Image 1: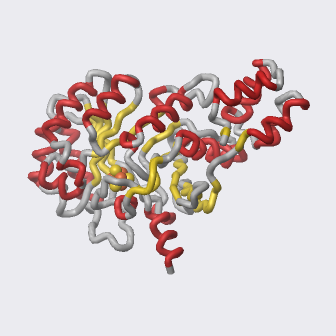
Image 2 (image 1 turned 30 degrees about the horizontal axis):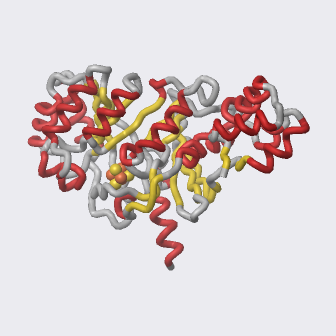
Image 3 (image 1 turned 120 degrees about the vertical axis):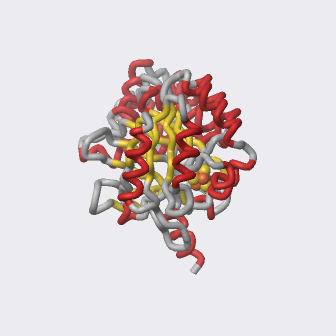
Length: 345
Ligand code: SF4
């Protein structure tokens, strides 16, 4: 299958049809910068070449199965179906202040089994291809066109652990940052990980200016292991060495999901303060999106605020995140899991 992301095959097609390079540039701009639909993009090519391009190239590799728009805050959850009938999710975020962003998936399901995550309950099915990763952004841009918006931030924080699908994620990232394609600067791309030191180091070496986010969630080894089984393989001590290396290139985002009675107590605060001392990090305190079947509860907002204030007093850049799309089950994996259950009934 030749997709619109297959640069080499498109070059072969260009040569075969004797299309001038500037016409291919217009074709790419139509697809990735102007978010045109397929027929509009084809019209940028010489008429004689259109039939061959149309026959050879698959315009989109994901099928939009559902779209849910929040009535509260401008989030849209998209459910896509892959060619082999798996469901994945992406979430468009339209913050009132700030750039339109998309949170995208990198795998079907996930092998990390984090206790708080709906995707973690599904198990792992397969990695997404480069084209399936990019198609989430392309289709979102086309949906946003009537609103005169375009995706300005891409966050790999949806279903899956991006650094366990490194080849395809890196190849998608290369496509996103190319000036002749999506033209997103490194500062506009964030890759979030549960903390796999070797892969994090490769990421930092390859993309020193790109934003890395570490899902820390606890600075106490036994608590972290309970929340994230991967932490058994990659203990906090080892992870800290990687954080030191990463912080030489700028601030690392620390994601800290706050769960009542799990990681929000005095000893949790002290461990976090001690663990991050001296590191240039930005801590995001994240509210928990409860979902049916989960026996966890989020830390109430006043306590979360107080935790954040103490971190600020201790000298850390800290942001209290607010949950977007709570009315459309925007937590990672939540809606797909619900759909899969429905399919079984
Ligand atoms: S939080 Fe991320 S890494 Fe953990 S199970 Fe969910 S998708 Fe996987």
